Length: 465
Ligand SMILES: [Zn+2]
Image (cartoon, rainbow, N blue to C red; front, side, top):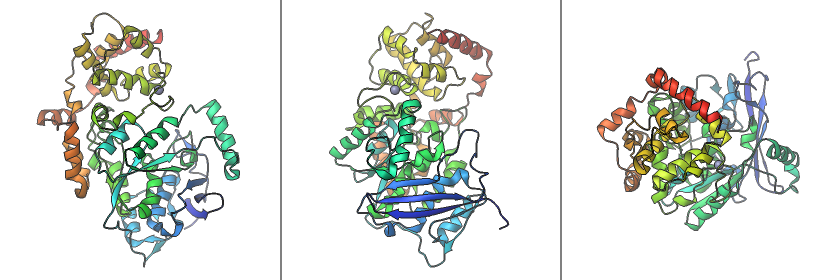
């Protein structure tokens, strides 16, 4: 090495006031702190508060390595040095899939981690609609691990003092995040008999603006518990809109995508293959699952509202309230609809062309038209939205079904069981419907003058709401 940039991760274990695993990110050069115009490295110390009964030494070096990658991936230059030397198998699989940097420090003697015989899956549980629906499709012995983002509540913790001060400022100024609702969701799941663990970590504060360094980093707490709690697969609430690109401009072949190849390989190399249980299910499908499952009502999609009381003032609330109205066949009053189009955050998202997860709005407006006999020509915001997102012309019933290609990604051990559970709620798409998904492409619409004009008129009127 002649002074190339690389990341060294050091890890320490502390048992003073509480059991903590602390990852320190050390950069040789600082030139990777702004890996993208969207975010930068904001902290170099990542703390996980682990349950007292978990001993640090039982955590496999390959799992520490995987967590190290999850917290630092965007910031790594040419190589990463892990806290403990990893197995040869993990290193060679990682190096076979990671192109931008090299994984080093190998212990030739170390056996790769394998799950014990009586192992079970774990879900990176967020409390939201998609991960709650995912849990309904998984075995009853699935553990749900919730990544708990710390907010000021116990200022007596000396180790958190400065951190909490920062959080207070953030809370007042930027973040409106309220974690009461996901905490209640965790409690309710425990009452339903699930094994639920909440693990506090400042992981999301490693970057600025606050968020995960990589999307699968929300599973870091589950990985640290994998050996102790005997996990053999890690599930996420990744839905069809994200996995197969249906919420975006074009279909993406998820099994062949760089995202799945990279993270699928790394997680499998650590003995914890990905379990994408809702990757073939749209947001419409997860709403149906939650409507019909025994605990789906505990889900909350609004990050700001209280338990069972969404804020009705954010983009997620806009989408969800409209979708729930058609899924539950409960018509909204004109006043309620008017209120929706006054939500500032929703106005911002709705002004995009295409709109994020536009397909869900196509479904909602199409069903609204069908169920509640909306007058499409009355120039209300709802009818203008309907025309703009093609709710009046596109066939939408496929969103109430699942896309069978998702089963190509599910580990054999769980395939049959998940399929049986899924089919209690949703049917598979027909051949024609699958064809429609495979050909998903918003480009012709984006280039169509009629839709450009509908968009301009819609945005103009939306501004004045
Ligand atoms: Zn909300």
